[in-house]
Image (cartoon, rainbow, N blue to C red; front, side, top):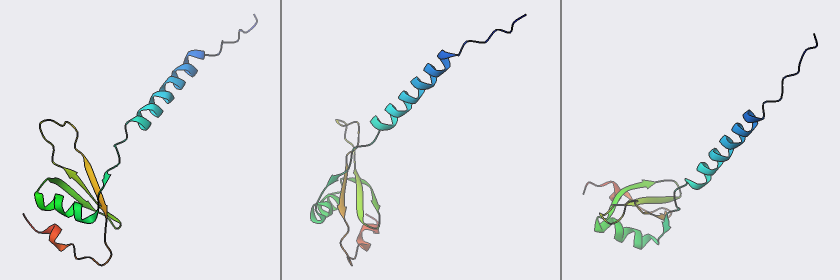
Length: 95
């Protein structure tokens, strides 16, 4: 008897292609919007008014998440560049 060749499984190629497209789509379209850039003084006004939920301080900037309201589902982020040689110890003080 002659040995029959198995047909190429095209469905597996299509399945992998669909999975790759879905992974790419979710990774590209699921990114958070960039924080709104504010001047340092505008950022300080937001801190002093108590409208911030969290503040993250990096080497180059400060990023804050505004407190959400009943009207907004997603929380807005703001950022400002850090000023060189600026005393920011007041940011860590308890409210």
